[in-house]
Image (tube, rainbow, N blue to C red; front, side, top):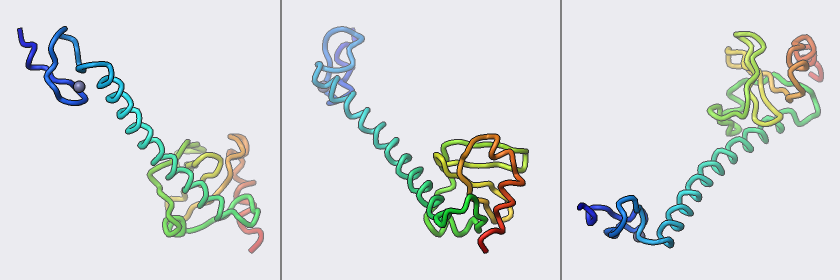
Length: 139
Ligand SMILES: [Zn+2]
């Protein structure tokens, strides 16, 4: 018998009894589970905060009501954009990749510039003439 070798996963006390017991009692079990849920929730909240910040930045860049705007990637970085996180991706072609944070996103030109867009559906994004046609307007 190696009963005394096991310890509660929450408080660390030695456990006696059934060999499959992981906690000394229900209180320790529920505290352990609650703590784990909180840790998970924090992770999710942190990433949601980053994604929402990213979205706000893209929205801000498109502020004057234009449909698309070409900006240096550096500008987004300066505003605090975190390029590591996005909600979805649309590949128009191997070199044309759109990255989205919710309904706002950008087309990465890979030369230091991006085209900030709103996600108005795949058929909208397929129409590059329409997207690029708006680029010069307003300037
Ligand atoms: Zn315990």
